[in-house]
Length: 107
Ligand code: FES
Image (cartoon, rainbow, N blue to C red; front, side, top):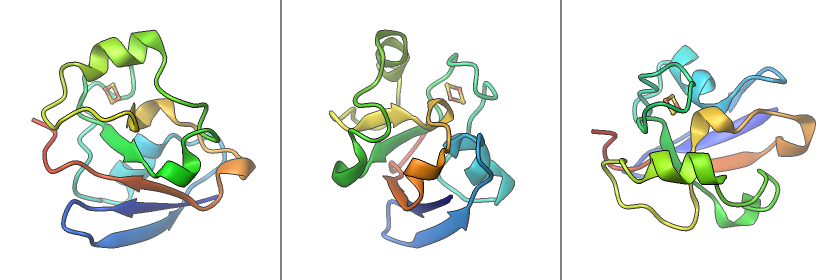
């Protein structure tokens, strides 16, 4: 399934991820700037912050869980209702075409 990562400056990158891959790892494996993923996907940092495109909010499972929301409080960029930690979004066939917007900074 493909994900389009839109950098803060508007540059868009469409990347095909394996099923079961999370959106943070997909960015790292493809050397995309804008996502750091310092804790490796353990819900223990907030450097994989992204904004899910409005059209996809429900399909990625709605807003962040409580645990995720607590971690999101330490992001560098402003939190929005669409904020998610990209390591918590796991690719399924239904998410083919997902669009995520990357924040200006992760620190
Ligand atoms: Fe650390 Fe996502 S990579 S919370």
